Image (cartoon, rainbow, N blue to C red; front, side):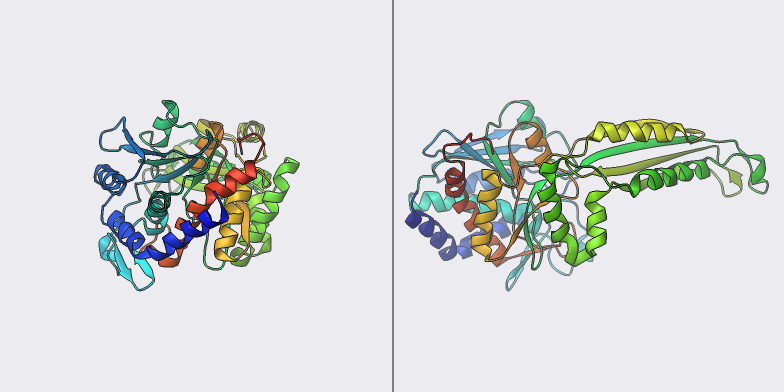
Length: 424
């Protein structure tokens, strides 16, 4: 590809923005709320929209109601750049919306559930395919697109199915999750590790008028949570030096909205959230048992098993408390200087004219699954901070920007990889 090819792709997107808007509204008109997460109608719509282009299209499904769509556009080399997006959305209460949750345009804004998370990005990815096809431009690498189901509830019918069946072979991946807010743009290059604990407490029942004769299981449980927070919640974590640049960028990205110290605490210390607390049967009884579910997050570069071992030791010191269940994951990251990160960030900076932070996500999703499977992955999409919110919307500028960036990305990534190993 030449500079003229890139300019032609960009011009095509700009000249056909009305078609991009129409495609986005078509996607929004299909309700894919999860649960139940039925994406069959949307997959059929995408198949139809791509039918006239030189692409290979395949459905892959273990749950007939939640199919995944694989699309391949051949390029000039045997390297593969993967684009990933999820078709399902979180549910919505139509009565709470002032706009149509199944799609409505108001000047520069397109409202609808999934507008920014992430049917707008999927429309932009499809439009990148259209730009290559309609301009007769051959991508420098093979382009693969995985439009998956079941992401919003962490189900197995989507991306896990494709990974477990070996259907995804790629050298790098960009996921169209919204990573930008008003005035600030970023590419997420890392996610955080997690420890999800279920604690159970036992006590001794007594009448509520004589609590000193019993042992309150809820009190014991809350004291254990307080102990966890005191021992771990304010601890400064030790990081792999390779994570430091990501840490600095992450803090800088969040400073304007939460302040420097809060942003620093978010990434430099564990976060501990008491999400569920259950116990007791009546107001006038001392509870004999109680249960809590706790979400602990650790920035990438921190060894999750080591922290979990210390947490188990801490809980062992708490009377009447046991760990009933635990699940955990290790945070993952792409080096900020990797070809993939550089290609996405430079493409976005060229399109927006603004700084693009190379930061960590605060949670973890499909990017973690792909990195764990050995596919270097980042998340990027222009959008708004209305993810999962009432009156969720994206903008026309964000749609056009995403389509432009996704169309330019293959050439920039191929150039960044150059003669190096394609992994990254």
